[in-house]
Image (cartoon, rainbow, N blue to C red; front, side, top):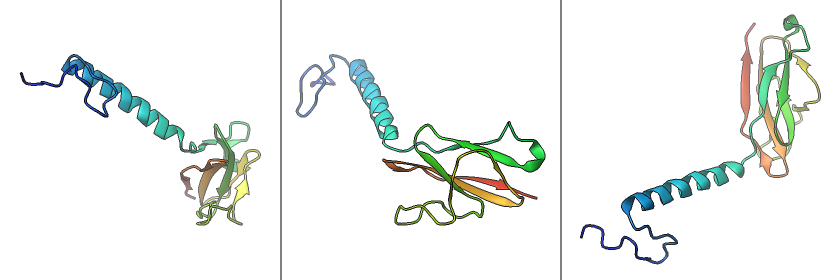
Length: 125
């Protein structure tokens, strides 16, 4: 018999499939659920878009984030300091922002769980 432990509980195994396919399906489901849980531990990054309510020549941008407050800079620096606090160069997003070109905008969302990854937008002249 090639797989003598199929159908037998082998500690600390929580699931014992009767076939190889059942074991594979169990692992696929477990991995999918585990990755979803891991992703939920991080603050989602903000979305940066051109502000639709402001005419294009003004180079206005807007931010949105499903959780937390968005902070951004227009000088390319990180809105989050290495100690986790807000940089003095950062601005809390309230409404669409007119940006003078050239600029490098860096934005992050901040919530009780921490900071999102940074999102950078390069706006050439």
